[in-house]
Image (cartoon, rainbow, N blue to C red; front, top):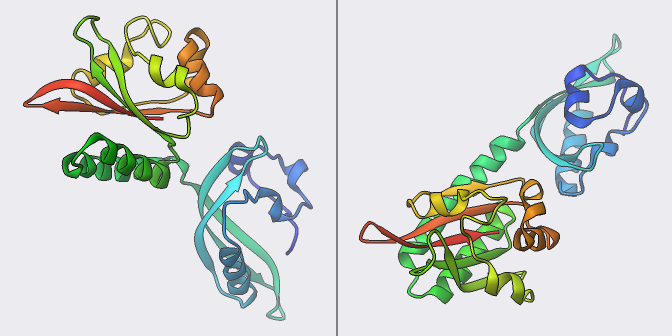
Length: 238
């Protein structure tokens, strides 16, 4: 399986491992547990046969963060024609993957919004899409409040936090939530799709988001609900 002999500065910036830390280590140290054994078997079979391997790997940084890389690994031959080394050239494609998943999820969700006959089917369809495309695990519908300005009142929820009634029943989004910001409602009630990430930075001053974050929620995608060009609610994916 070999040992790592040299890495450049970009490798250190991406993975967190310095040349001193990684030298002599097995490349398995980067395994994230997300890539199938079949891909690794194909990789080693290809390069040991003297050919170049090209593909994507879901690896893990020194701090435990998972990342996607698109790379090529080529054998280096010695004077006698034997493989002596391997050279790997890799590119971080984590952000590209995230954007691609988000686009797929939004596209499929828009189709579900059009074709679902009722809220229950809509929630089930969108939660399935969110799980498959982006790792989201709860879908939530709120309708615009007729009493409180810039507020969404809970209507229905489906997903992994269904056993958390406090979060589900009381999750209102208004100008006094999200650390004093009204990012969600101002965008949602204008009829725009939005994303809100880094909830750990926003949750400290909001008990509802803090509870959501403690249950594993890391980000939110919002889809406005409209009728005849008028926004009447929002569909949130956690």
